[in-house]
Amino acid sequence: MPGVTPGSRWRRFLVHLSIASTALFLGVMSWLIAKPMATRLHETVPGQRITVTATPHIDISLDSDSSVTVTNTEPPRIEILRGNAFFDVKNTGAEKLQVKVGAAYISGMDSRFSVSKRSSGGSVAVAAGQVEIQVETGKYLVGSREKADFSNKTVTGQRVIAEADIVPWKPTR
Image 1: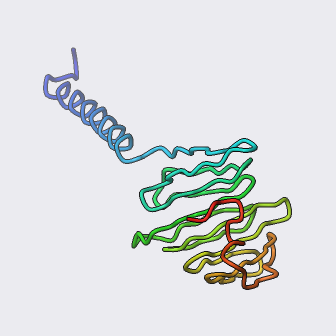
Image 2 (image 1 turned 180 degrees about the horizontal axis):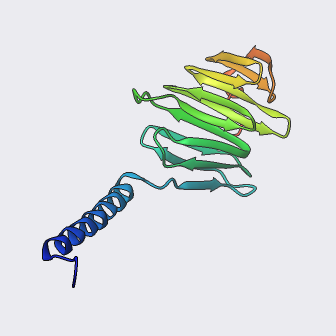
């Protein structure tokens, strides 16, 4: 063939081979690096209560007719869809646990607290440690043996409560 030398065919072959190799390498690397996010749904029916282990450091106890979602990310993203949940968070040295309740976020580390979701917001009661509630108007701290009600915009009714009022639906240990 005029104008085509054996050396130019090899160069063309090597260019195509390097392009295909690079594409294959990038495809394999993206498959190995990208861990797909999975979300688990935990829910109870009326009359049923369960305790699930979200991670080795986080246990969640659900009241009757309640549901939460938990992602496999680090730290996990947890959202209360309905009802009541009690969180037992052991100090992991990592980021704080963050729980979404409507448009509010509750975070805590090395703490035990319960959260109730209602249509207009919810409430949080702390058994041990301290949690932070983030709403539209800012961040609020709730300490041990305190309870606070919240909406998507503000926190109201922060008060001291008895230990029995923290998780009234869960038998004491």
